[in-house]
Amino acid sequence: MSDLLVGTDYKEEILRLKEELNAVILAHYYQESEIQDIADFVGDSLELAKKAKSTNADVIVFAGVHFMAETAKILNPQKLVLIPDPEASCSLAEGCPADQFRKFREAHPDHIAITYINCTAEVKALSDIICTSSNAEKIISQIPPEKPILFSPDRNLGKYLIKKTGRNMLLWEGSCIVHETFSERKILDLKLRYPEAKLIAHPECEEPVLMHADFIGSTSRLLKFIQEDSSTSYIVATETGIIHQMKKARPDKIFIPAPPQDESCSCNECPYMKLNTMEKVYLCMKNKFPAINLDEELRLKALKPIERMLEMS
Ligand code: 13P
Ligand code: SF4
Image 1 (tube, rainbow, N blue to C red):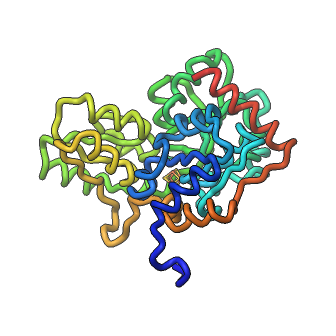
Image 2 (image 1 turned 180 degrees about the vertical axis):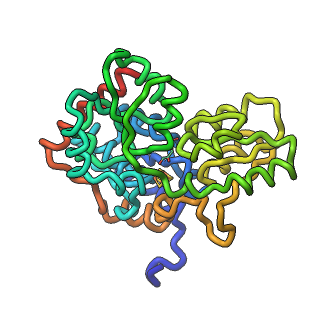
């Protein structure tokens, strides 16, 4: 932290700048609790994309990862989209470079490409329809049964969707480093210790973890589930940031973060999401930088499959 910023009340400054810039702060559930608490809206990937599309603000401050802020810019070319840390990437986006994805598509010209929103604008531009974990099943169910599908880049979500929809899709071999960290053995140990706790999991988790889950869903579905369900405790197999909203929604319930294989690390926290801090949120608003900039031709190509997603979900 720079010396100049010692003593700065980030919350107060951020709220002041929000008025000054006519800005909206959008935050993903995996952000630090204090960032979630100053956000105008906290949501999952789909909800955040929808909010980004509908906002009247002049400036969007996107407290999430790069592909999310980029999606907001694709939907809002005229708005200034700020990202607290442009290094906040995603292992799924990084594991699917556009040149290799292009070859994947070219090798299967008869397939329709449904691509998870966790990818770069270049990969979106090469896709037919974007999806998130909230709407993937719904979107796949609208594809004519005879049409073969390429699903990229998350193989775990892909495998889960094949099981759920009965569609035999061709999968890109990508994964989320956070959701692959959970240990089936340690989760089973926890289940023995807390037999009344339900295991709830994000579909980016690997099959052996999903196999034991009482409920599987996107971050917002998990949050909804714990509010409506009658159990009083849950083992939560997704990034730990969501537990902040779970505790706020149901302070009477117990939420146990699913343990990573190596308990000496914080591998159940997304290292990209956690790059964002209150200081960086403040600085990006103060400096109106870093901002997302996109080539217009690329933006228009990437917009098409996002619009198809919004129409279909
Ligand atoms: P959702 O917000 O769609 O549940 O996705 C989780 C995630 O890993 C975002 O990067
Ligand atoms: Fe990407 Fe996984 Fe982090 Fe989400 S949690 S941003 S999928 S690395």
